[in-house]
Image (tube, rainbow, N blue to C red; front, side):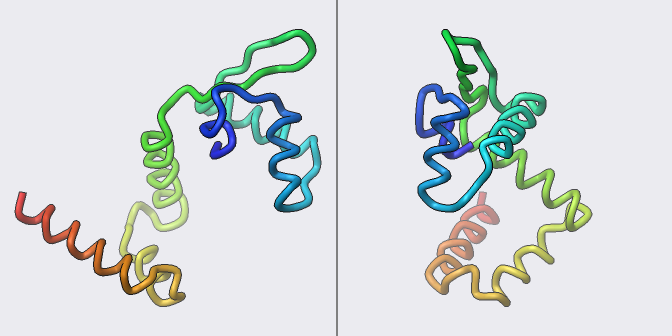
Length: 111
C-alpha cells in the first residue's frame, strides 16, 4: 500500500520492481497481494493497454487505522495494552516516542 499511495497509480510490475530493490519477492506474490487489497476495497483496478493499473481508494490514515484495528482484533482480541507492552518491552518504541505518546494521551484526557 505504501507504494500505491506514493504514486497516483501503479502497475503490478512497478510495485514488484520497487519492492525488489529492497528484498527478493516473487512477481506472483505482488500480484496476489494487489488482488487481496482490491478484494478488501483498498485499491481499484483498471485496465490500460497491456497491464492492470491500481489506484488507492482510501487515504493512508484511514486505511492504516482500519488495518491496525483489524490486527488488534485478530491478534489481541481488541486490546491495545498487550501490543503497547510488547512494543515497549522489545524497544520498538524510543524514549522520545514514548514521551510524545504520553503528551498526546495527556492532551486527550484534557479534552
